Length: 624
Image 1: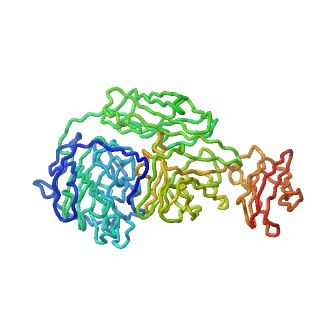
Image 2: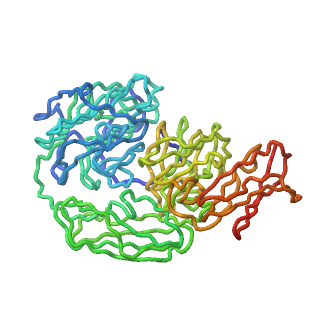
Image 3: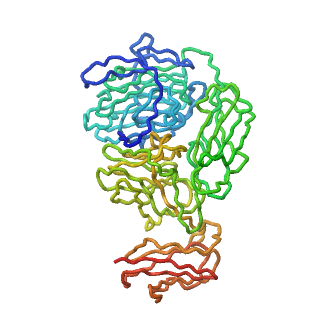
């Protein structure tokens, strides 16, 4: 899927050493392709080299058919990944082992640190935060599993001893309407017996030349993105090294370079995904960091530090020492000093790791975001990861959208509204959703709205009538449509943005942009009717009715911290009693009552709750 950026667009590029070659063929005119590797292979720092089946000593092309014995992969779409999948063995890759893998729809697999490798692609090796690590780029381009006419499929298979195979079959290029016959079949074979990686290319119809579909990337890289091989990286068709049908490329360590690497690194601040964390204002919370030994030798006396600031002013600092870390060891550290956000807003957490003689400085620091929010039973709380700065807007050709993931420090909550900052609108409507995220990714749609989007404005979508209650874990809110959505690129970055291109996936530029999408939640009593959640509410509370305005019925939520007689009545503007909704002893917990005003005229009304020294009155509006 192609992304269109407008306004002040932040562009981050990697410095590449490239050679150019003239293109051949009749695919179209334009600048010559930029190729990061010529038709020979020099060892990378670990000693991996590649050789083709057309070269002396190269592998023999032997397609391994796993369609009848392998596992059919589900969930692949346009610009997404699925997994992890078990290998049932440990495959030696660089100086460590891999036992599971993720599969990307754009023609790659990776062993750890998954990310959405999508257009615009990057040359390998590459340390970019949004680029998958432990990456095998088999035949990476803008591919699309949603084009069902070509019957695209992906299978994986392991014999549990020494072989793993992943096959992509009949996968078409995006914008296949330009040429519906564009199809690509290829596979990767991992052979534990000789630690080799073989890419094989079956029928290739097309050369990644569809409109706006011009990237080709084949290669590999290690778990930090600092070491790797590039067979080819082309940004302009015709691609000089586009694999032909019947080609095989073998990657294998053929040279012992004697590489010795001392490399302590941060996998993430706060958590392994380096995701922003919501902390309750005024409440102490533990600060974590996930660290790993990325090197080839054991480590000792590793120092890890966090520094938290707000608006440039330091607020907290702590350091922990790790006596030793074994080769490949990853652990989550809990700092001794708790952090208490004093005010509601954004804090920046900066993490560093140090070990003497460290040769990998690119993974020695992480910046993470802490979003401080006020939570009180019965009161609305807005969850946002940005400050509203408009850095730019982006949209998808043909329509698509964006969303955010949300994890909270308190439950249960009711999601009441979603905020979406929309730029220019091409076609109405906008679809806004709340989705379950208990498995870590967008799942079941809990509520949806189709609304008319207002351009160049923050759109507020009311979900109170849906009674979306989240009792634990992650959830998602997002919006789709043929329109542009605003984002912010001001640090700290939350790393919580997701994209929708015929399926949800982590946003390909989540490391540099946060979409201005928010939600409002209302913390509820931990005791629902019947006491299903456990715990005891501490205060009486009367919530605002929803919907409001309403016709002809509305719901009113109230909380009782101890068994008591509750009187809840409705009055008109003259103070005359219209209806008695509750009159009796109520059990501890959260309760909900409905008022059907079918027999009452339009106008302003008031509802009042009285009980055991507590009185609260709120206004509601009936519009017929």
